[in-house]
Amino acid sequence: MSDLEPTPRTTLRRLPARGHFDRATVNAILDEALVCHVGFVSDGQPFVIPTIHARVGDEVFVHGSAASRMLKTLQGGVPVCLTATLLDGLVLARSAFHHSMNYRSVVVLGDAQAVTDDRGKWDALQAIVEHVAAGRWREVREPSAKELAATLVLRLPIEEASAKVRSGPPLDDEEDYALECWAGVLPLRLTPGTPVPDPRMPAGRALPASVTMYARPQTELDRRG
Amino acid sequence: MSDLEPTPRTTLRRLPARGHFDRATVNAILDEALVCHVGFVSDGQPFVIPTIHARVGDEVFVHGSAASRMLKTLQGGVPVCLTATLLDGLVLARSAFHHSMNYRSVVVLGDAQAVTDDRGKWDALQAIVEHVAAGRWREVREPSAKELAATLVLRLPIEEASAKVRSGPPLDDEEDYALECWAGVLPLRLTPGTPVPDPRMPAGRALPASVTMYARPQTELDRRG
Image (tube, rainbow over all chains, first blue to last red; front, side):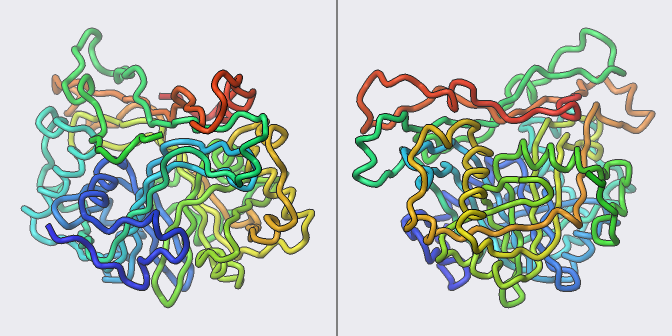
């Protein structure tokens, strides 16, 4: 697994210490993030749309209805930016100016291509369902041929990409450390609540493993404060 | 407060029932979301960057270093797309095909303008700090003239915008309701953890109201399952 080469478009001009180009960091953020935001240009106007993704190896997949404006635009091979962001905490400094967020984000630039063979589409859809809730694919009805045909799947190679990470306590101006206000980090985490059974399901059906075992993939890198 | 007029660019072509154009819905989503994703085009390439925002009236503000590539590009009055997304839950259907997410998102299209007067910048920065943690502004040192000069603030009018909301249980194909798998929603929420004091702060300092009272603004619309 070779690491990523910074390009002029992915090099961090400010705060370069926050930049990461190793695939382990990039992949871990893409895997933990439930959704990403996909940017594309149509008639000169940028659009940014939230969507579910899944990474498989050195590619990231998105999917949707074959009638979707975003997917129809993207399959034309136009430039795309796929950004995944994890919020890890509020950084509460002693000055308004040094307030910040702890976060991990990945930006992937490139051209997306439609996955045209059924096997490739099937595998990508399985990866997307498993990305959202590991183990779910084998609990549910698999796609029919008609459903597969109605779904557009796009692949984006992870070639030009970078991660950006901020962690740790606030960094205040030296003279501000004498101030008496509280400073620190309020950690944030996307937390699952109590599952809500479909009202059309008979009462008492046991929760499946995909729900009882639900967790995002975790890495060394995250939640250092 | 007049509501928003759908345009060809903000009209939902698919699933139009998910679209909302009333300002109350748009504003509530912008206010609850801690960060947004800003899309802009540079040399034909779209970029999507996560950033903190704050809404004041019918405008949304973003800020950053005067050296930021994004902000320098945006202040040229180029078309921008600002998208805020709240994840409310995993929608676990009986078929792979009907899996979905419950979410609320807002897309704002337009041209951003730099806020050039110090009073306008000050008010926007206060709104941004208060957006992240209500009550924090009065707990901390206010910006100096030098800090104000080093900060670029941009305003984007909320004129061409729409919200998109999915809530409620999965919608399965009629024949799939007979399947025996569990179906329902796993709610998700961005939850604060235990505050982590800055290691450079003397021990025992009391938590401030901005932390003990921390909560996102909530609306009628959210968390219906």
